[in-house]
Amino acid sequence: MIPMKGKLPYVPDLRQIVIESILAHRLRSALTLTGVIVGTAVVALVGAVLTGLSQRVAEVTEKNSPNVVYFTKEERIGPSLQQPTAEERQRKELTYEDFLAVEALESPLAVSPQKIRGSYGPTADVPKVTANSRTAINPLILGVWENYPETQNVPISSGRFFTGEERGERKSVAVIGSGIAEQIFEDADPIGEIVKIDGRLFKVVGVLKEASGEGVIGSDELDERIIYIPFETFRKFYPGIEGTVIVMRAREGMVDETTEEITSLLRRRRGVAPTKPNNFGVNRAEQVFELVNDTIATLGAVVVPIALASLFVGGVGVMNIMLVSVKERTAEIGIRRAIGATRRTILVQFLAEASILTTVGGVVGISVGLLFAFLFRLIVSFPAEVPVWAVAAGLLASVFVGIAAGFYPAYKAANLDPIEAMRQP
Image (cartoon, rainbow, N blue to C red; front, top):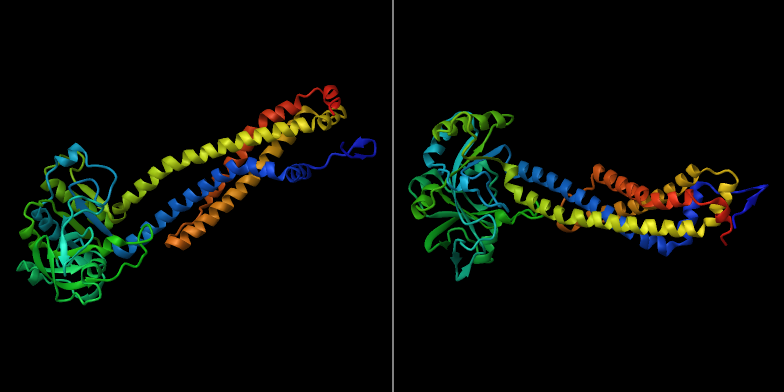
């Protein structure tokens, strides 16, 4: 029975109706909103990861490879989930002569060739690096010029980088990552020691600094397993590796102009017609991390449908609870209709109830997403931050679910026959 105030029934305002309905069925409301909460929490968390990824790539690029561009045979450099296309595999390799032509230009700040033995990711064909009967884990050998630290940030912990004279004389010297130093030398000082790379003896002249732990996804283990050797030495020991990567660092504010100049030069050298696309890759430093973007996209393709399914389940639950609410309040609806409430009034009331109910779920879900983003940032040192668009998307989705799920119960309530409704107990 609804309370009476004077001659007409007193109907509490909309907020009071919703609050009383939720509080009267706390457990049912909580279970009903589980799907909405999970869905909006996932939206917030995915938004946080994507935003954090973008920020971290920018930070790592600015720190390690500012204004750096890689010219490669393939479209991409670095780890990738995509295999090279048939057209890419048939391309001519970039040559050392191509590099020398680029190096002769005045516009770049620094240019170095780079040859690679090993893989940026897991691979069956890994170089074998040993010392003291210990073997390094998945090392990556890079043959570069002595000016490579001028193109990239190469922090040296002890020792030095090799010299132009050592490169010219094809000396067997190496600068090793701190992870490799720890694996094969443990606590001993590696400087001056001998390391065996694919069966050949190299003298360690430098050790890179330990990774800061501030890579794209919380660590930068790639720096831990790199070994730099002189480019000419690399060519001597690995003549079968033909491909050359051209690593260019542009002057501040001149990245686009310098990249365009080098691209035009390589197109002419490789005989690319004006109407044809490049037959080589031009990669900014941040594109090296596209594997992370691909991984996030793949996860998104899996996680987003789960979020949508959760919202759908939540919508079904909301529809169910609203239908129950209509049945429980049939007499009240009949009385309101009898004293002049229009169908529109009843329709708006129940739609508003459903929307407010799911909005509460959306707010809770966003809060859960914020909490997980904070924990993610705290545990793996990742700048996960829930963006405004994720909050807005989560709230709008929850309101939409409320309207969609509440429409049928609201329509049913609005179309009850007042006389029949008042007869209900």
